[in-house]
Image (tube, rainbow, N blue to C red; front, side, top):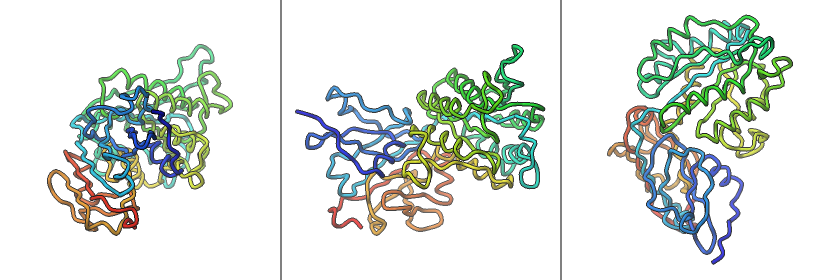
Length: 381
């Protein structure tokens, strides 16, 4: 029997590019069914249909995840949903990779880029570290260089607190006592490579992230001047992705080059770097830091929030009018539709969990189930 690939519409391909793929054989056509991207473990399949056919499925964006597929193509067409997620008990790993170049001392809102970012991370009540404390293994790396490799210097210059769990005080104290390097450069690609190598040397985790915070156009250790290191930084993000490590880049300056952030954001999702947010449906949104520390802290929590995500892509068009037909159950508790601590539709194939239920998903929740019965295609609105 000949197996062929189907052509899906642009939006569906975009969805698949950010989700683990499972392979379904229907009518002689090899299809890809998409599920939600998340830092969660899902029930795994007993056998991969693609392997049984002697095929090699595409590499998933998040190798630690699984997907419970629809039983057949008709289910995808009829809006059938049966998602069961079991959250991993092992905390993810997050390496904070922070630009220590001299320009981080420049004005940013009512303070400097360095001080606004530092406050957003170390604040004991609202900061990123306080939020991550029990939910992630956390490390911190400050990076810069002094004229790259010139005069035989070491590059990149890295000042690091190794990854650890439940001891954010040492990370906080280390960062609180650090300042930008006078005359420091921005070898971003080299620093990403070094951070990825550090994370790869650790034990296997369900998710590993590098949270890159930078204010300038990258240079390289080989060429510190001029700043021609953008493509090297993008390539480093792509290498990280190929090893199962996701790099989230946040621009700590309103003047930072949008193209650079755009290309790194796309590469972190396994997408072509030249896609443009707002033009191409698949493109990732470039991330710019808020100038107010508390607002910036909330932004950073959102960047890492997809380790345990309150937004669930259903993988098929359900239709918001069917809300009362669905069941969303968190740790055995049925969540109500359109309530502050329940769930709601984002669009026809995406839902979001809210309030205290979202806090449980992001914290110590163990299982989430989302089910919708099948309907005929003309019944789905």
